[in-house]
Length: 251
Ligand code: GLP
Image (cartoon, rainbow, N blue to C red; front, side, top):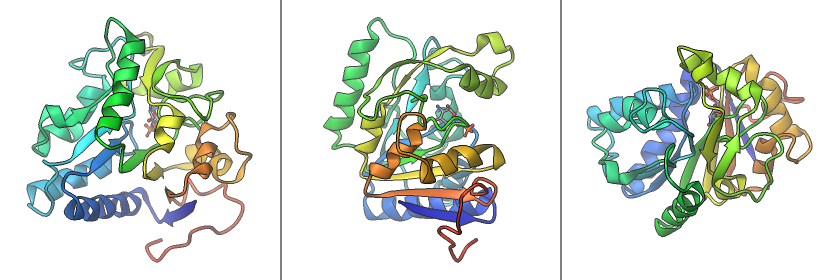
């Protein structure tokens, strides 16, 4: 596992965008795994800027998002589908049939979960996966207790996660209590994984993921079993790491 520590979220986000830009130039049809939440917004803003400046062309990529709230339609303003359209898809000429999210509403979630996994496989798997991390060490919506081999499925959100995500809703009572999420096993099949984390509130989860025991108390710790993972951090999120790790020229 690699750890890169940058002076601030902007520098860390630019590092991610530079890597995505290079990958897309080399393989315009690359399959990207994408995340939502507050952390990746600068990444998406810069990708849009580079697309609109003609520096990159994202129109040939295929994307798979990690998760979606159960009960929210793709049109719901707080759905992850809306988040992705607003922050990226609508601005980079990505046609809807190239973007994939697990459904927040459907008649049979077990079948939808199987279909999502099959769709990822049909596209040859995810070449490059962007992750965030929850304050409690969750990745996607794999909360503590999630098995390392878990697959796409419906999960119950913890009170802590519901609280953390309530900032995106007008009324906390509207925050969904369940989600459909790629599993840890699904995520670990991505060829390359980049976890982005900013701020002191992520420092404990980051330190547990990188230096704590590998186990389901901290789902992000399972990433240490993957051959190509990089944690891309700002100094605050790296603040609880026990030794100087990953000092890099940009930091
Ligand atoms: C949610 C998402 C995760 C995300 C996490 C952190 O739980 N399912 O994918 O990493 O929130 O979000 P933020 O970046 O807003 O801290």
